[in-house]
Length: 131
Image (cartoon, rainbow, N blue to C red; front, side, top):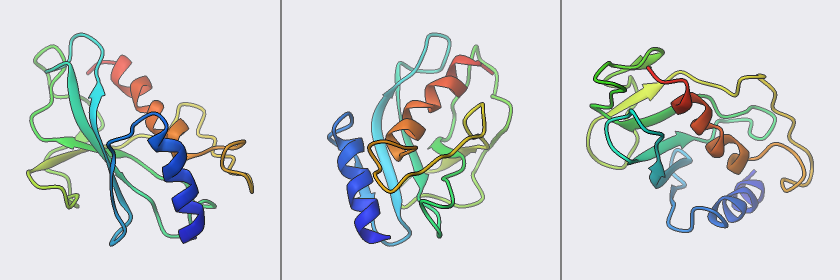
């Protein structure tokens, strides 16, 4: 699994070069994720955890620093503070989220199937939904 995660992170770094990875717990933080208009801020850090059983088991949900709102409203399917806190400092909230189609089709080659880059880019889908 370690080699697969390293390959996936290399793909993710192609778009988010300054991501942070914590092998203890397999936590990933993507700084300065661009938000659509209406959200509290233009950019936000996002984090997620690579689960046991990856890539057969897809990641689920993502974390943002506490206090996020959309149009002044706390978003739905969001818990603050998150039950588990990422190891990146501060207080985090959690979006219960997975891609709209619910599909995760990992292949032997992470560049051709579902991967963490697709997953992270997909957070934009949730943000475009608004609160």
